[in-house]
Image 1 (tube, one colour):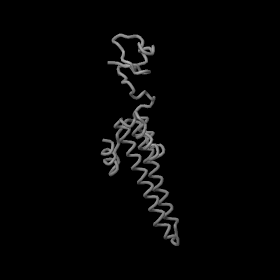
Image 2 (tube, helix red, strand yellow):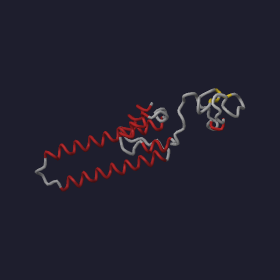
Image 3 (spheres, rainbow, N blue to C red):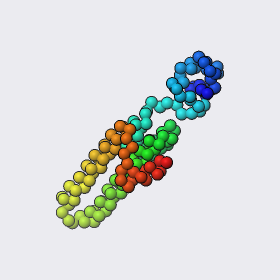
Image 4 (tube, helix red, strand yellow):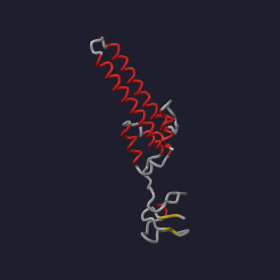
Length: 154
């Protein structure tokens, strides 16, 4: 059975217009019946939404877990959780690095800051790589946090 996209009224077989609101039946998605009160098309495909979960780290991960059509999509949920966990790892490493080497401020810091710059560059490249993989519809799983994300995504 198909339903009207605008008002949710049930449409009869071969109906050209919704009997309740007059919306043309062509407004119903091709081949997909829209349930009353169901999610409307947002214009973002799963791969674009999956890539955007990494955009601002855990913030966009949480946002996509809260937005209605995407919180039910397993692909988007996986990448949202993986983005959140990757952000937590980055923040934890940054805090740990600052705490350990902040106490050692009397030591020559040139080498350590160069090393930390390389770590930050590695995280930037990993972030871009994860966005690329999600955009290409690849459910790339990072070691350790990937299985955790898959478990949370269901």
